[in-house]
Image (cartoon, rainbow, N blue to C red; front, side):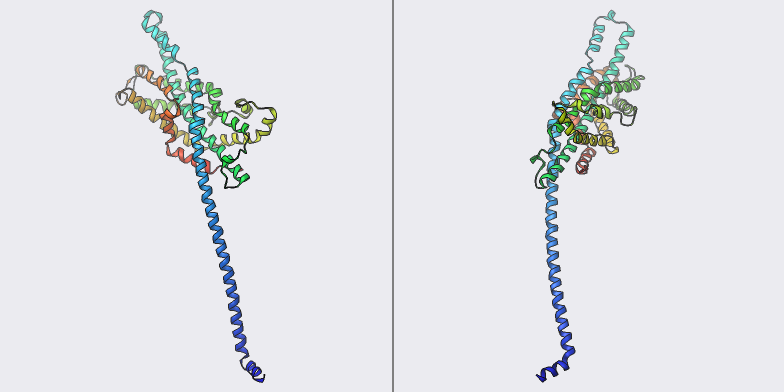
Length: 372
């Protein structure tokens, strides 16, 4: 017993230091283990989040591609068919051409001034029909893609909130069908309501640009390109900066007029908030600087393709030397109709879809849509 006490007194300091070191070591070991487990748990959580992020990205990409296919195969063909019919009705040149043919076959039936007036009207209306068709096809194609991207994004977000990210938007119908139908029905607004104003303003622009161009003047590809771009530029710069938006979509007071499906008053009232939000977001996109740039590059691409196509149809004679405007008018008038061909046969819609700036714009639009 005494030896233990002597040992304690003699080695007390060493024993305490050793015990302290061992205790600290054990404590550090426990802390290290806890930290290691915590880091392992954190790594598993991060890996799980990365996996979920990749899954969400894959779902978004798949849904985005589905949305684009819907626009190209369903919404656009319907709208284009209606637009084609309305353009044929509103810009029918058959009466003018018949009168000119009659005057040619019966020289005394028309005076020189009457013939000149008919030819001048045919010149203006031929360019008007071509440029109206070009503008309408370009804007309708872009507008429909704006719509389906906005609607698709809302459907995806609403479904993810309600069902969890593991469910695709096709699994639910959280936006009322009446709202969807009313919203998508606005694609027909241009053909149903916006056409008279569009034609009137475009005809005014064509009249101004063509007033110094005579039927005997030679037109080549360069002159044609400049003429069409001048008409488009003058039309787009008329009035307020975004006056042309009124040709594409209704103002708030006319939203209910474009519904294709009958709805009762209660349905309209209960669904108006979501519908108004969709329309408001659409108008914000259409009036944005980014969309304005997309419109500009798209119209330029269509004009380039159109001039090249007309040059080929004229046997290449319009490429350099050119031909008299009077001989060019039948091709111009005919092109106005080919511009509104069915989407799967329409080379100009394919040109718009292939513009890199267009693809980038709609990718960003879908990805960055507000989630509220």
